[in-house]
Image 1 (cartoon, rainbow, N blue to C red):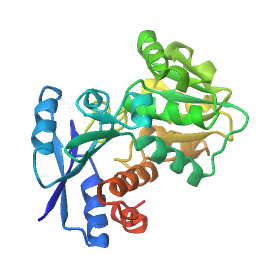
Image 2 (cartoon, helix red, strand yellow):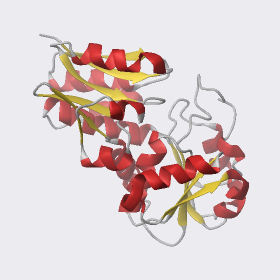
Image 3 (cartoon, rainbow, N blue to C red):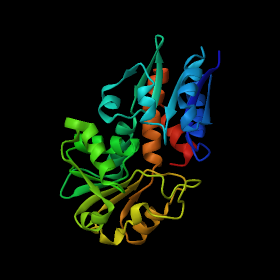
Image 4 (cartoon, rainbow, N blue to C red):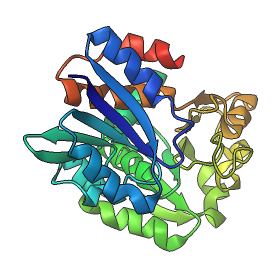
Length: 277
C-alpha cells in the first residue's frame, strides 16, 4: 500500500518539502507520497482529523501558521514539543497522534554546520511564532543568551513566559530597541515570513533590521529558504557577514521527521541534492 505524508501550511506553494521527501522516499525504496496542503486556519482541525483517519497515513510536517495551533490537536507531545509549545511533525503511533518539534534539532545542526558555537555575544531572534519558540529553546539549550524581538511587547513576553524554565537566558524585547541589541550580537536569526517568496512582504527585511549595526564577525541566519537569498541575507552578504539561508535547517528537521515516520536512517545527501542545499 502506498503511504501518504503531508505538509500542512498556509500558504503552501513555496515549500520545497515535497521535492525533498520524494527524493528521500526514492532513495530508501519507500512506497510513499508527500503532498503540500494549503490549509486555512479554520480548516486545520478537520484536516488533521481527516488525514490521521486514513489507514495509509505515514506522517505530516506542519509549518506557518499552524505550529502552535496543531499542538492542541494531538494525543501526545514529545518533551521538545511540550517545552516549545509548537509542533512541526505529526507521527501516527498505535492509534494515537504524536506531535514533535524537529525544528529544534534542525536549527542546532544548521548552526553547527555553519561553524557557529557559543562564545562572546548574544543572539537576537526576530519573531514570536512557533519557529521563534523552537529557536529560543535551542539557543537556551546551547547556553547562548538570546533576546526575542517582536512588534508587540506582550507577544515577546508571552513567548518567554510560555517556555518557562526552558527559557533560561532568553529575554523579550520590542523593535524600538533592536538597533542597540544588534551592536553586541553574535547571531541574528529571522523566524518571520518577511522576505519569503509568496509571503506578505517578499521585498522587505524583518522589523526593518539594519545589519550595519552588527559586529563584523556576526552570523545572520534567515530561516526563509525561498528565495535562497532573501533581502536580509543580501544585505548581510553585502556587508561581508556570514549569512546562512534556511535550506540546511529544512534538510535536518526533515531528516528527523523522516526517521520517525519510517524508522530508517535518513538519506541526507539525496535530500540536500533535491533542494540544492
